[in-house]
Length: 331
Image (tube, rainbow, N blue to C red):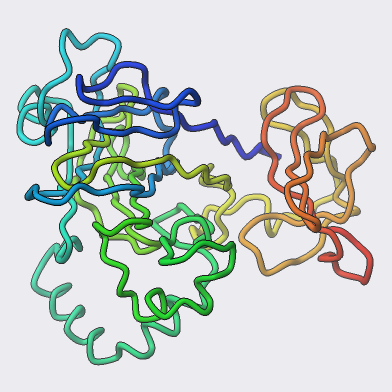
């Protein structure tokens, strides 16, 4: 069984001259002017792994907003960090950056899709119903829990359910608490598409044919009105085989007898005897093979973060009283 690999996201120590990071490397602020605000992810992104930030503060008087994208340039090897991501960083080659605006961030690929969009507008009620009831965002073969992706006009884990701004999708992309992320999805051999996600909605492939032969870092440019952002940690199975809708699902509907092991260290984790059918996109188990097969870290009163007991790779969560029978857990 493949482990759900989730690296702790941080900003790179190399950044624009006007950027200041907090001690954890997860919050970036532009301390002066409107430029020299480029930040990079500390590590390259894995395929299907989202780098998500939330806008924390804005500065009035400037024209323009956050810019986000990918770069194949190792930040550590840059002689100087460019003043702007657009056009400076992009003009150097090997970078793909998208300027976020208050409106019109969605990519329209062709006339047929545009026509589909007009038809979708006519059925807005159905779209909203789907948007608010679906628990995961599906992008090609990537499946991401939507709860962490959505910016909210007020705090609270489930406040979006009652949040009027959220219900009418009226939290502007450039507003405080808006959440914006970038990821890349492999397509043909050696190439990928870049997708921008704004408040839980995929904006489409904003760049295509990106070579994946080199590591790809996230780029976040604190430009103009966007003064500071913080990274939002999102844990999910971004390995392709974890997403049942992709048609390449291996483990969710796999019920042959055997032992599921960690893909990183081969530590035995679950027996097929404890596996059962669940509506989530990932395989579900009621118990581990042995108590020390995994390490648990309490996150809420009803959920534990689960790590491989041998190598520490992230495996997902244990949800108490969410199993097939009363009192059973779901891994």
